[in-house]
Each structure stands twice: as structure tokens, then as C-alpha cells.
Length: 216
Ligand SMILES: C[S@@+](CC[C@H](N)C(=O)[O-])C[C@H]1O[C@@H](n2cnc3c(N)ncnc32)[C@H](O)[C@@H]1O
Image (cartoon, rainbow, N blue to C red; front, side, top):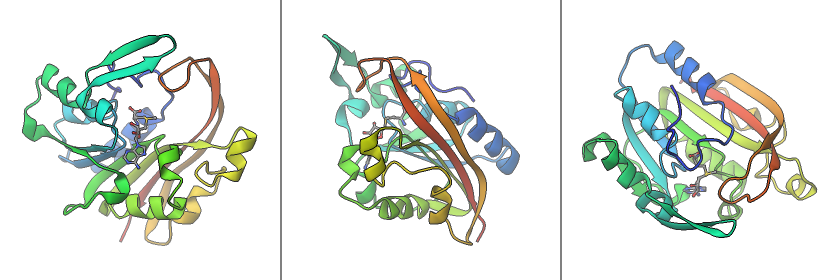
């Protein structure tokens, strides 16, 4: 599965291809109920829709969902947003449920076969919640035999080491008890990235990738 090539975030690092292999191995050809937490304009929404899966996408940033403008360097960039992207790509409204809300306020009636979040929890808007509470909330979205995937930021700068939302290597697994089988727990090291929205210069990130299955 390839990330959506029109996303604002298409160039940022992800372990999505590894996640895709795990999904193929664990879920065979089933149709899946997928939840993308921090979906932005659809980087991970479209690859699941292309495979015929049902997607619920949540983000609390209205511009990423409904379009508008963002500042990048000296330019103002026009953003179509997820909802318009879905129309442009020809998807029926029923294919993807788009919800503008904070993940901590997301009241769900379903649990999901696949829950994926990519580089969301280090956003400052999340610092008011302990990281354990955020991860527990996301874990609860996963159904039995379902899969949890996260790309996340590990600490790299001094300021990150005092923030628990940048999780050091080998620590994320401690949030997952016996109910969970850890499938992937990677420290991907420091990766240099070109400028993108929110980061106007070449910069470095320390990425982690994690996958776990809820076994009972
Ligand atoms: C780095 S962006 C990446 C977007 C997406 N993962 C991608 O790669 O296309 C992270 C997204 O997570 C969203 N996000 C962060 N914290 C959130 C929260 N508490 N509730 C909902 N969305 C959140 C942000 O608004 C942002 O759109």
C-alpha cells in the first residue's frame, strides 16, 4: 500500500509499508474497519479506501479536514483538505466517515480492526494529557484480534527528553500488557527530513515504529 501522493505529508517518514505487510499477513483478504487517528488530509486514508476497506478518519484540525490556508515559509498554501480530496478521488460519502474532534473526546460505538496513528501524540495540544492516557484511549479503539500501529517521535533534542510525549526506545511496549502481542517495536534512528508544513528548514527526527495485536 502506498501513501496518498497528494497529501501534504506524503514526504514525511513512515513505516507504513511495514504496517501494510503486517496487515496482509494478519488479516488476509478481509474487509476491515479502519480508524486513522490524526488523519490530516488523508495520507493513510486513501490507501485503505483503495483496498475497499471502511475508514473512519479523525483529526481536530479543521483546515486539514475541510480545507483552507496554511503558511509555509513566505507563502500561503491553499489546502483542499480530506473532505474535498475524497470527492476529487471519487469516493462516495459512505466510504469514509470524517470526524473533526480531539482523539481524547472521540466517543466511539464501534471498535476497529486496524487503528493507525502517525506522528500525532507529540503535538503540543496533547501535552495536557499524560501519554499513558492518550495511548490507553487509542488502544481502546482496537477490537479483539485487531491491530494497533504507530509511527512516533522519539526524543532527539534536549527539550524532548523532559517531555514524556517523545517516547524513548523500547518504552512504548510498557503501555501494552498481556492482552497484547507486540509485533514490531523499532528504533529507526535519526532521519533527516526536508522542509514541510510546520518545519520550514531541513531538520532531523528520531522515529519509532510500533505494531501490536490485541489477542484477547
Ligand atoms: C504530523 S500530522 C501527520 C498527519 C498524518 N498522520 C499524515 O502523516 O498524513 C499529525 C496529525 O495529527 C493530528 N492530531 C494531533 N493530535 C491530535 C488529537 N489530540 N486529536 C486529533 N488529531 C490530532 C494533527 O492535527 C495532525 O493533522
